[in-house]
Every structure is written in C-alpha cells, then in structure tokens.
Image (cartoon, rainbow, N blue to C red; front, side, top):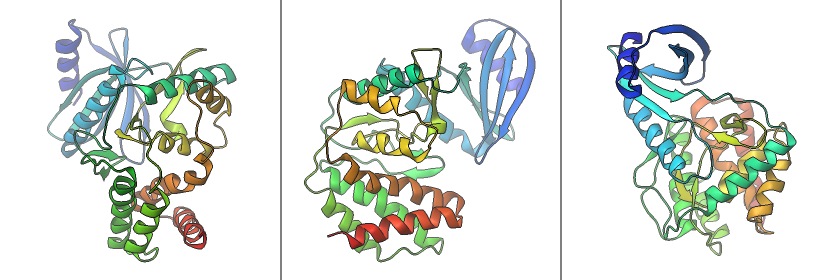
Length: 290
C-alpha cells in the first residue's frame, strides 16, 4: 500500500520524495488512520479493505463539494487509490485542536454561511452517500416531510428490523414523523450530515473545519441537532450560528426527531444497550405526544 501511496503523491503533488515517517493514529470503529510525512509534507491517510474504494471516492466528492462553498474549511483531497489488499484516501493534514470560545463562535458563523450557500429547490443529493458505512438514500424529493420520514427514519427502522431490533410498527412511526414535519418547509441547505462533535474541530483561533461528511441538501436543523449530544461542545457555536442565521423558535421541538436518525444509525452500526435505549426513549416520547 505504501508504495502505491508514494507514487500517487508524486503524481498529484508534482514532486518526488520519500515517506519518511508513518504514525498510526487509530484503528477506529471503521477505518485505520495515519499521519505520514511525504518529505516534509504531513499527509493524513485513511485506509480500509480494497472494497471500500467506492466509499472513499464518495467521501472525496463530498469534501470537494463542501470546499466549493468557500464557507468552511475542509481537508484538501490529495488522492484516492488502492493496492492488492487495501484502499486509501489521502488528505491534507490539518493541525486541529479543541475549540476555544472564540474559535467555536467563528465556527458557528461559518456553519451558518455553509447552510446559506446556493439555492437548491429540492431535498436530496446527486448520488447516494454513506453515514459512517450505512447507505444514505438521497433521491431528490420536493417535500421535506416525505424525504426525511421515508429516506432517513423509515430506512433506518427497516435496517434495524432486519437485525432483530424492533421499535414498533415501522409504518406507524414513519407516518408519525411525516405528520410532525408536514407544516415544516425549510430552505434546502447543504448539510455536513454527520456533525457529531468528533467530526469538527478548530484550526487556529478563528477558523473551524469539518470532515467525515454525509452530505445532502436538507433542513439545516439536522446539523445543529447533533451538536448537543456531546457536553464538551461549547455553547459559543450556537451563539455564532445565531448571529448569522437565527434558528426558528420551533427548533427544539424538532430536535429529537432529527437526533433519532443518528441514534438509529448507531444502533445499526454498533448495537449496544445505550443506543437502543436512546432510540426507544425518543420513539416512546414521540408516540406519547399528541
């Protein structure tokens, strides 16, 4: 794999150098990651089995789409390739660090500007993506309540059912979500789509970055709903966001509906009693609320 990476970097960067150092960062839930030095240039490497190559191509296209908005920093894509046994994605290595109150505020402003970028009349994306490794269906839809209830909640509930996790009647829950969002017609925004706190960070004092996207055009509240799931996320992110594009007063009533999607995905990926109980609680609360 490393020989192939070296050849690809030489071709894409336009100069020849050796891979001087390889630092194994993690063997995560999904991918292996490294920081390497190509000459003096730090590179971030994400690798997996050979059959993951389409996933890495998909991720690269999303990062380039986010970068096209010129609103928020993403790591520059330096190459995608494979070897006999592995596939890999090569990215600019960004010196990320925890948010300070000021950098969090700036990141919130940048996120709001991303959500304001371009006009898009429909919800979806030009191709299906993945949230982590779960397929994310993105065929275009004019009505947000149909898109979200069917392509997000209904699809994840069906996956859970196939794995033996039953949360109730799928049609009943899907129709409930459809009904709850029936009067909500948000402007389609380009979403990061998987904005867990681990997928964003600060760069310096006044800039943030995002990575590991699951992009589509949808309700901006879906991105914002993820941030409170980690107590370490500074409230300044919300303050910065509100200074550019204030959220609706009804956001908090919709937040559990949007968090449900991400907990369902974690159930389907990792199982676990904690994830199951989170999903169970949200669904029970929704069913109990007129």
